[in-house]
Image 1 (cartoon, helix red, strand yellow):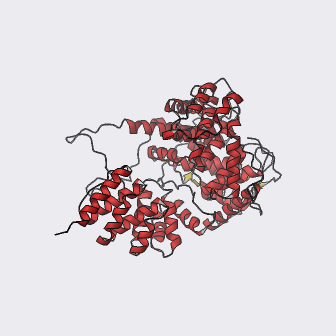
Image 2: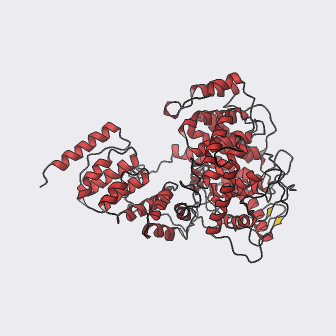
Image 3: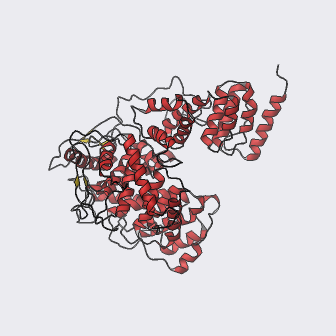
Length: 615
C-alpha cells in the first residue's frame, strides 16, 4: 500500500528516565489524532474521501476511537467506501473496505460485504496467500446486478452475490500470483470477519486452512519469522503477519473441538452442560465445583511451537527496540526507511493486532502498549498527525497510530477463540539470548492477563463517559477489581453510562462481573428510576434495571417484571423471568428465545397468577 510520501525524517528516542505516558495523555493523543483525521474529510462531510483502502483505514481508526457513525467525516467515509466497494481490485483496498463496513455495522451493507468477501476468496493464490491484484477483474455486466441490493432473508448469501462469486471463482485457489505476507495478513483478517456475513463455510474454511498451511510451511527456523515474498528478507512486521495467519488455525482448532467435544467417562456419564444464561438467578456457580489450580500452567500444545517461535523472534526485536529507545519503542520516521516494517507505524499496528488477538500484555518482556504509547505521544505533531513516509502517507500513519493507542480489536471472535486455546507458554514473551544455531531461546512462561477489549464507545472521542469506560476496558488483571468498584460505587450518571458502555464491549467472566456490578449499582435507584431505565434504548441498561428490581426483593416490582417479558431483547426477557421466579417462587415462562406470541402468553399467565388472591 504505497500512499503519498511524507516529509518528516529522524529517529525518535525517549528521553532517558522519562516516565511512561499516562492514560490522560494517551486519551488526549487519540482525541487530537481523530480530530486531525476528521478534518481531512471535511467539516460538512465533503472532502478527501475517495473510498480506497486508505479511506477505510481512516474510518476504522475513527470508529475505534469512539467517533459516532453520524459524525460528518464518518458519514463521508462510509458513503465513499460504499460507492467504491464493487470497483476495488487491490487486496489491501478490498480487505480494508470489508473490515470497515463490518465494523460500521449497518445491516444494509451485507450484500456489499459479501461481494467484497467473494472478491477476496477469488484472489487467494494457490500457496494460500494474496498479492496486490485481488483476482480477475469483474466486468460491468457482472457488477450491475450487485448495485442497490437489499440483504437476503436470514443473513444468507444473496443469490446475486452467489452468481457473482461463482463467476469470478470464489471458493477455490486462484491463478498463480506473486503472493506476499503483507497483503495476506490484511486479507486473512477480512476473510475471518466475512464468515458472520453469510459466506458459505465450504468457501471460507478451506481458504483459512490454506493460510495456516502457508505459514506453517514457510516459517524461517533461524528467526521464527517469515519472508515478505519468497527469497526476500522479511521485517519484524512479517512475524506479526505469520502470527495472525496462525491465529486463524488455532481458532479453527478450537471451533472443531467445540463441535466434537471429548466424552467424559464416569458413573454419571458425560457431564451435563450448564443451562440458562449467565444471570446469577439462572446459573449460580456450584459451591462444590473444583476450580483449576492457577499455579499449574496449561501444557504447551506441540502444534503451537511455530507460534512460540514467532513470539520469541518478535519479542527479541521488541526487547532490542525498547533497549535502544530507553524504555520506549523506537519509531523511525525517515521518509525513505531502509527497512519497511521494522520500526515504523505499520509495524506498531501489526504488533497491536498480535497483542490483542493473543491476549498478550507483554511480548519479549516488554509492555508493548505502554512502550509504544509513550513513543507515539512524544512523536505526535502539534496538529495531531503523525508523519508520513515513502510507503505510507500522513493520513495512513495517523490512522495506524490511533488504532495502536486505542488497542483496537477488529476481530473479537477470533481473539476470543485464540485466547481460549492459548497455553501459558503462548501467552508469555520474555526471550533469552538467541543461539545462532537453534534460533531464539525458549520463552520464559509468564502469567496471562485478560485481553483488554477495544475502546469502542458511542459518543464523541474524549468524552467523560468514554474515558471512564476505557479505563475499565483497558485495565489489567491487577487493576480490574478496583476500576470496576469505582464504576459501581461512585455517584453520578456518567458512571452508570460508562459501566453500561463497557458491558457491551466485554466478554466472558469480565462481562459477567461488569453486569453484576451494574445491577448492584442500580439497586440504589428508586422504583421510579428503575421503571424508566427498564424502558431505555440500551438493552444492557434495561437488563440491569430488571435485575435490580428483583435484587431489591420488593413484590411491588412484579408488575414491572411482567411488563419486561415483552421486551424485544431476549437477554432482558431472561432477566425478567429470573426475577419473577426469585420474587414469587413460581415459573410461567417464557422459554429462552420465545416468539412474541409466546411472550404474550407467558405474560398473561403471570398476570392471572398475580390477580388471584394469595393465601
